Amino acid sequence: MQTSYNGLTLPADGKAISYADGKFTVPDHPIIPFIEGDGTGRDIWRASKRVFDAAVEKAYGGKRSVKWFEVFAGEKAFQEFKTWLPDDTVAAARDLRVSIKGPLTTPVGGGIRSLNVALRQIMDLYSCVRPVRYYAGVPSPVKHPEKLDVVIFRENTEDVYAGIEFREGTAEAKKVIGFLNNEMLAGGKKRVREDSGVGIKPISITGTKRLVRRAIEYALANGRKSVTLMHKGNIQKFTEGAFREWGYEVAVEEFREHVVTERESWILGNVEANPGLSVEQNAALIEPGLEFAPEEFRREVYAEVGAVLASIGKTHGGGTWKQKVLINDRIADSIFQQVIIRPEEYAVLACPNLNGDYISDACAAQVGGLGIAPGANIGDGYAVFEATHGTAPKYADKDVINPGSVILSGVMLFEFIGWKEAAVLIESSMEKTIQQKFVTYDFERQMQGATKVKTSEFATHMIANMG
Image (cartoon, rainbow, N blue to C red; front, top):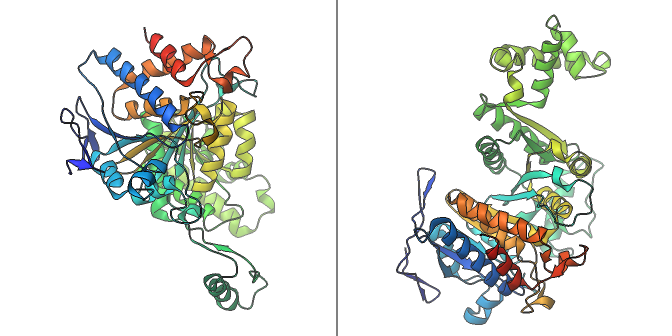
C-alpha cells in the first residue's frame, strides 16, 4: 500500500480496512476515501460529512471515528492533474477497499464516456445495489409509497453498458454489418441496415450468476421474502432470457435448502390442497391449456412436476416452502406496472444492467426521487458508495440541494462495515427532520407548511435530531 495518493499523505491516526477469505476487517478508525463530486457535490459532501461524523461520535463516544481521505475524479481532478480519473484515485479505492463519492461530470467530446462506469469496470464492481424505501413525510406522487420497500441488484459490467459500439458510417461499423449480413445472417430474411450504428450486448454466465448470488445472499441475510429476476427474455432469448435461466440455476444449485422457485411453489401448493392429485393433473394446473400442447411439451411438464416432488417434496412440502425465499421472474415492461400497483409483492430485484438502471429510477420516483436515492457499487473485496443523481451545475455552490442521496449512501456504507448504530441514527434523524418539515427546496415546494432550508441547514437540523 502507498503512503500517499495524488500527493496527499494518508492520515497517520487511521488504518486501512482489510479483506481476506471473503470478509472485511474494519478497524475502529478506518481510512475511507471520498470524492466530493462535481457541481452540487461540493455542498452536498460538506453537509454529509458533518452528519456522518456527528452520528459516529454520538453512537460510539469517540471509540470509533472515520478518517476521511480525499481522492480526486471529475472536474477537480482534471483541473489539478489534467486527467479525469487519476491512477492514484483508483489505487486508493483499491487499497483502502471502501469509499464514497458524490456525483461526477461525464466528460464531453471524447475520453471516458462515464467516470462512474469507468470505476465500476476498472475495479470490477459488478453489483450496483439500490435500496428504495419510503421515509415518512417525504412527498410522493403515489397513494401508498410506504408499500414499496425493495432492494435492486443491478449487474454493473455487461449488457449495453459494456460500451462495445461502432458509429454509423465508420469502417468498423461497415465491417461488423458486412460480417453479420454476409456470414451470420446469410440465406435468411434478417438484415442489418447498412446505415446503422451497431452495439453489442454481452450477458455472460459468470456475470449473471455472481450478481444473482449476491442478491440471494442479501435476501437470506436480511429476511427478504423474495428475489425477482427482471428480464426481457421473451424477446431477447439468448441474452436476457439466458439471464433468467442462469439466475434460476444459481438459486437451485447453490441455495437449494433455502429457496423455492415460483413454479415449484405452485406444484407443492397444489399437492397440499389436494394430496390425491396425479402428476398429470398437477401439470395441467401449472400450465393452463396443456391438453392442447404438443405431446413432447406435455411430457416435459410431467417430468418437471415429478422431479420437483421427488427432489424437494419432503424438504419443502407440507407448507415448509412458504418459509423459503421465493425465486421468481417478471418481464421487464410488466414489472414497471407491478412496482406501482403491487409494490408489496417485491423485496429484491436482480436485473441486467440496462433494466436495473431504468427500474431503480422508476422506483425512486415513488418515494421522493433521486435526491434521496442511495446506491453502492460492490465487487469482491471492494465497495464504492455513491450519489445516484447528477451534478446539477446550475445549483453548484448555492447551498440549496438536497443532500439525502449521499447521506443515505453513507447509511449503506456504515451498514456495510458493521456500524449499524451510526446508520440507524442517521436514518432516524433524517426522517424526523423531514417530518418536522425542515426540507430543501425540492421537497418544500411539494409540502404544505414546510420550511425551506439550505443544504447546510438541513444537516444542522439532522444533527440536532440525533438527540
